[in-house]
Length: 156
Ligand code: ZN
Image (cartoon, rainbow, N blue to C red; front, side, top):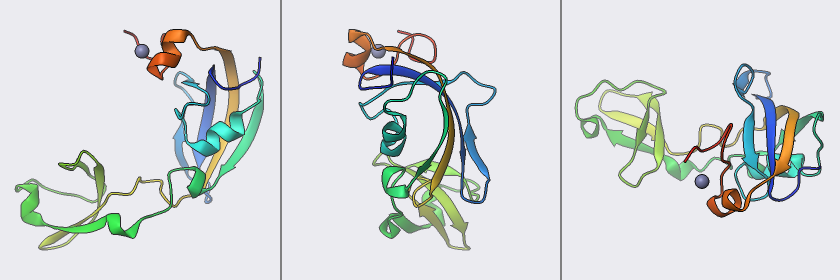
């Protein structure tokens, strides 16, 4: 069968930026298992995977618009050091805001800390090397829940 809406696909992938740095990879882990067509993956991945077959190996280039979005400078904010309650803050640390979003520390100044609420991959062109390992139909329960059950998914 092909990867179409409500197919459960298992894929191995390696994600690199345009400089060839590996940002993420399923190598050495279980393949990523997801339900096609319901927003489990970024839009560019779902588009590129649509219609593929088990065993297909291919490269996908995904623009920020179809990946993790373009960078929104309004999400970059300076916060007084005191807001961190005296804990040591370093560049790269991530915090959850009171609104539930995640911010990443991008600069630590003397009195102020700069945090960025953009996804770390916002504005980045993504290069995926993909191999389709398996494809099956989703069960009614999986479609209702919006996630995969069993190997590579939820156990409940
Ligand atoms: Zn479930």
